[in-house]
Image (cartoon, rainbow, N blue to C red; front, side):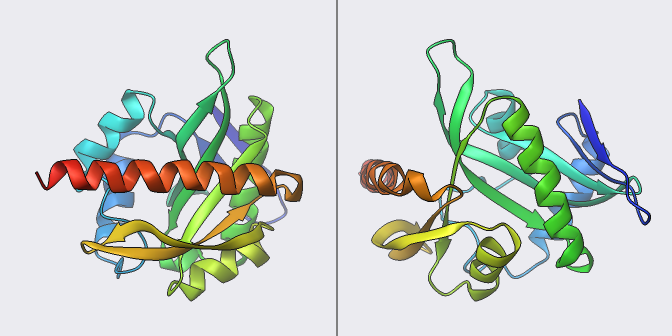
Length: 197
């Protein structure tokens, strides 16, 4: 399914069904960027691993397009489900190609949000490395998330427990965001401990 927003300028769209070539363009551009404080150690190391997580339903992926050109992607991970199996909540991740950051990325986020809300996803959270200032600005100003707080040792970055800021899209979800962050942090640290044995 593809959702498009028509404006006087470029045509913005998001799709759940990107082509392998589109995903390759996005992945290669992302991998050539400085991701030092962007993604935790648990982030998939290869496009094949990332695509497997999407295929297995661990992530909901939307590829973003402007006039048919790949501009970035957003996804939800650590999903929560309704009793009927549909997704009710998740943690947002994303990457926009450098040229499309700023106003276009903000408009594409609105298309992503509309798409997710249309399928019943109302509770969206995110976690950002304390040193990732650009993402913190985009999350608050561009995506209109609300900062919940600084979570100590939330995830491993380069093998080290690292503090992250927790955000929620809806301020009424503040307590839920912290509760879910606590569970995620415990799960990530346990998983890391088991892998070192």
